[in-house]
Length: 83
Image (cartoon, rainbow, N blue to C red; front, side, top):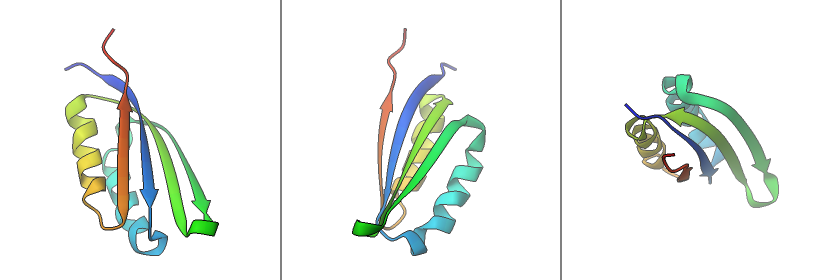
């Protein structure tokens, strides 16, 4: 299976409600997470999480699908093209 490197941006609109559920999903896919940075944006009551991942498109899609289905969570992904 081809592996891809990518960056995932996660915006959390309600930090208190979603953080446990987000961490559960990220732990489930922890083997493909290369790096993680979380920044609280207190002025807007948001949190922003950026991930660097290395995995198959199926694995990355499964993780982002689970994250995106959580209430108050927005997810965007950018993957390197094959080459």
